Length: 386
Ligand SMILES: Nc1ncnc2c1ncn2[C@@H]1O[C@H](COP(=O)(O)OP(=O)(O)OP(=O)(O)O)[C@@H](O)[C@H]1O
Image (cartoon, rainbow, N blue to C red; front, side, top):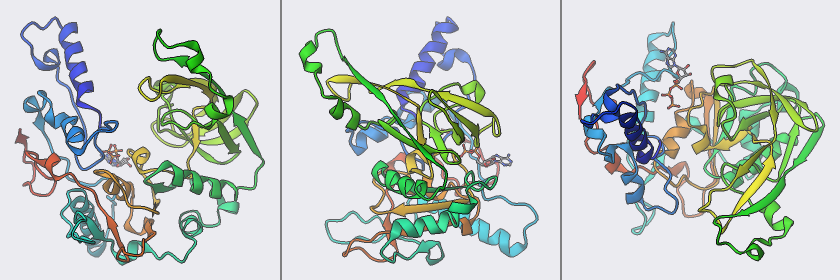
């Protein structure tokens, strides 16, 4: 979900464009916004729970002017020609996902100091940890990847989801090593520039090794190891009209010194062949006392991706690997709701000694739903004026 400031800026821009002196929101234009408060909320750097909730659109002056319509059918799980039994199972699974997202599943606390937010995962979704969880989750989601990676749709339909980037990198590295094609490593060219004119030049005297080791969200890593046949994700908007957006997944078809050839496997331009060039990606001015400018392909290998990054994806085989529990509102809900069938979802939890087997943390900021209708408590066709 975007920060409410973004919607408010669009509102002001429309008012300016429409010369709307009477202050109608969005200059009197009808705007359709789509979203789900069960999903992850705006990111507020170093923000508290209150800051995050306050940044959501439901806390904006715009919200009281919005008319809310509820979408009630989980289209990912929908399937035609179902037996009554199968339809019932899908309905139950769909309801379990909603309950999880709204924090309506009974929870357990581990100690008197622990917030009670541990939920039991149904046994059929669990993979039992036998001591080598990364290999287990790979075997489950990418069976026979060494030989099957070249099958059409094999890689498009599956992904492993993790809460954090370090774990994503470990899983990606492990699957990449199983792909039998030759690898090519692309190294970035890194430079720094001052955040402001007042910065002293000698303040920017960082060693290249130090700069190369920096990792920052939205900026590709210094070293990018790729092979023909592996799936990658764009981490920047390159050309939305050609389907090249932040989050688009591609299959690598050619590795050349100055460009990478690939085929789009998600979004509205599936099947299109594209070439990706290096770009200069910069860190945010608020991140460090300098701006890192890195020249690299804006790509990341994506056998695995973070849960936050998976928002928007639809997949037939999802492995949720939790070496540690999720840590912010909506992450577990986003992860479990990427799936098109219950049997395609597998969850592997690495338990600490004091944690109950088969349980994991579900973080839900209940106050975000205040004043909002829930997806299940409404009569058919009911509209809500908030
Ligand atoms: N009217 C429809 N008929 C058939 N399939 C649909 C329809 N609407 C959506 N879908 C399918 O449901 C899935 C989810 O759609 P979409 O990504 O548009 O939803 P979303 O609300 O943006 O999802 P999320 O926010 O959970 O990522 C996609 O696989 C899409 O093809």
